[in-house]
Image (cartoon, rainbow, N blue to C red; front, top):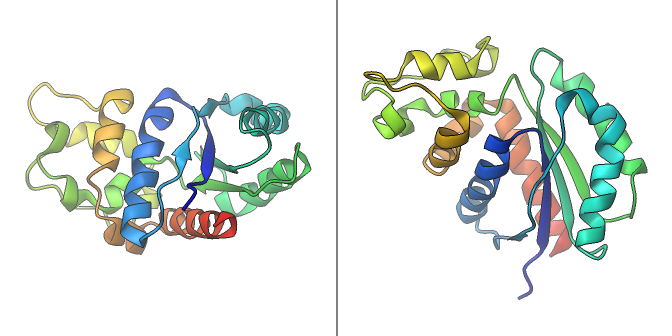
Length: 196
């Protein structure tokens, strides 16, 4: 069985380092073949509208037009349901006609960690009695929420901590409590099945 190539477009270094591990976890959980990851492409948030098409075209070229493209961005304070279709339209206009998808994490990707907080107890300096907030995707700053729940002098550092924590989150809990994570899982599954 040939494994699909997957190129990711993300905003920051922490997502660049964390997403392959998270995608691998989701694939294992869903019984899907893990794709071959191409080096993620980083795009600055303030330049997404202008540069998304170029980013996707470059990613597709590196895969010789054969593979999958997945864009994952934080919605921050924007409405993900309104913003995602606009970005998907930009992506659809871009470059070659290979399978691609856009998902926005509501607030920040760290909201997905909050959704499965109990599965992260004791990891990376997080407290042993960690409990999720009532609505993880409504927490104003998920990064600050994590920082406040670190023990001792430890503080949350996305580049160091996010790649480790996504490898331990309980996929089912995160899907139940964070609709944008469930959307990410469903989108990834659809994308990989289309390629398969």
